[in-house]
Length: 268
Image (cartoon, rainbow, N blue to C red):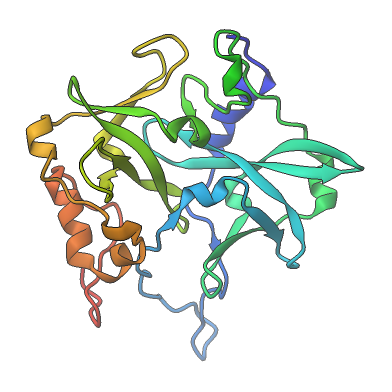
């Protein structure tokens, strides 16, 4: 594998990435000008695959380009940045934009980039890591510490040592800039995918064969057969049913990394 400058840039970008991205609206102040303590908003979940060729607008509403890939920390699931495919001076380029430069538009339920085309033109071109043994994979943002979302999608996942399914989607929690869940489609077991917290997965880029990516859930296959599923792929149900959301994490022996408030309550 040949490592480009991106192999150094990507881990540094992840180390310096802010855990939260901006949300439109801003904090409110009281009559004395002091900032009020605002209740933590309910988590919002979007399909990270919207990053696959989705158009990204700047804060002025003008198109900047399309998302080519995401750079994800293997351990935490933090999204360090998005690789944008942009047209600059008549040429197509890939540019890695830190995820902290994105703004979550609550009303429009979309990510926008707090960056201009002029800034993009000054940023270094993203040089993908090329694997000579798998040239058909094309551009990659994977390194020993990071994963590319395009390589995660359609990767095989094991339940301990037994085949479990294939990654069919990634669920992004945009306000924290984290991949919250991996959607795993089991072969021949219905259309609704299993929804698995990122913390319940591990990823090995050298198994089962060199150049491939494989995930593992440390739970026996017979137990995983009763794991929670995402009915009809409805991500909104994760936002509107806090008890079901907590149940997903509880199944894997985990606590939600964000507050899950019941409707009309400020309690967790």
